[in-house]
Length: 119
Image (tube, rainbow, N blue to C red; front, side):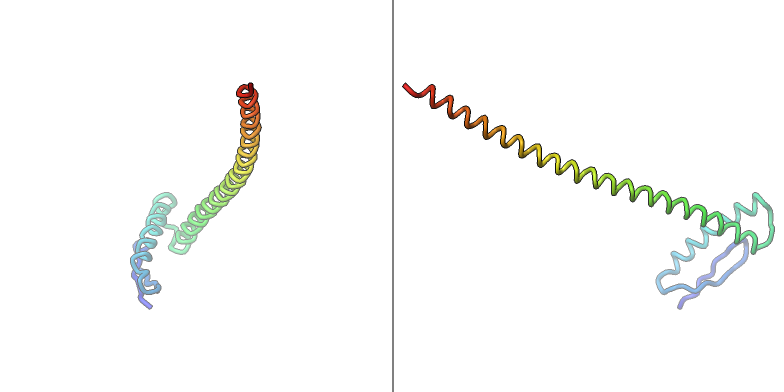
């Protein structure tokens, strides 16, 4: 299992990951370090543990918001699917009604044509 060196708040950490995930882990580490650095600038150096905890909480909050938005979008998609299904049923019914009206019109036209053609 490969080890990746990740810098967080000017400290180096070695983290194990699955083979092939090294670059992804480095990218995530850099993202996390940016959060920790931003927090350190706003609250000062309050200790690694506290900074890491605060950064984790901020990211958990963002994840929670993103999950909630994703859930809302999934509900919207389901609503749109239901509306589409209802529209399809309505369209099929309308097509059937139009077809019946055209059939009736055709019968009437043939009847009128037969009367006109009769001596």
